[in-house]
Image 1 (cartoon, rainbow, N blue to C red):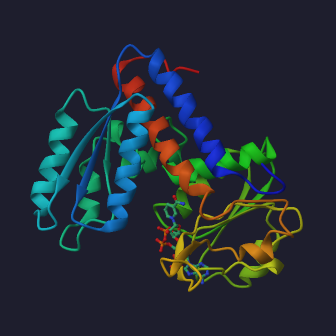
Image 2: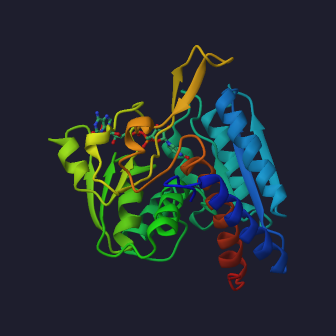
Length: 291
Ligand code: NDP
């Protein structure tokens, strides 16, 4: 932390370094396979970064780049082939998939023991039941940042805004696992600002730029902003910039600790993906997880 800023970049770099040390100590080199369908520019950037960091941490990266008009059956076959490949430890299907492909069907095909994004029904069930398994990356990143900031989270009131399968729900469950008292808020929540003001840990995961204002935040609260929104900004060469769901300029003086966007939760997501690949490799191959 510098001041009250939670430096996600720094924490993520440390986590990636821990992963690299763990990889070196393993008898085998874990392999992460990434499936990318189509030409979505943002997806290409995400995948490029994932591949770069996979290699930097000493792991193997396998890429399956498929054209935008690939049929759903062909994508399913690709996933099945990766499931059957004994050298592949983790499978990531980059979302969103093109409109003609049912993402749920494709995700459901991923072997849960290789589900490094933690998105399959089996992974979700394991999380709900408190069984060991691969946990979703962005929610795990939020927990790590909160623990980094506050230490033991027991008894803290955590308010998650958002109830998506990808972020909101698993985030709530992971903070429950940390013995927090958890409230899940969403678009139908009444008196949202008052609900948020009760939070020791506030986690907006909505996708609405600058929604959370200073008077939504309890003085001294830890604010972990999951939202990533691109807004217009004539002062930038690109004409746009990224902001979170929190009105950072307003919130920063009130919060005890706060993540910036970018540079907060985002870098943690990839670091947790790499960590999951090591966990998957160890579990599949019967190896002890390095410290
Ligand atoms: P979804 O659109 O799937 O979910 C958004 C949630 O926000 C829904 O549960 C919705 O409620 C709730 N919501 C919408 N409007 C309001 C409102 N006015 N007040 C309260 N709640 C509201 O988005 P995701 O969960 O996939 O992503 C959320 C954000 O996180 C996005 O900005 C996304 O870009 C970002 N993200 C960031 C990642 C990272 O690495 N940092 C990774 C993944 C996502 P309801 O269910 O009632 O409709």
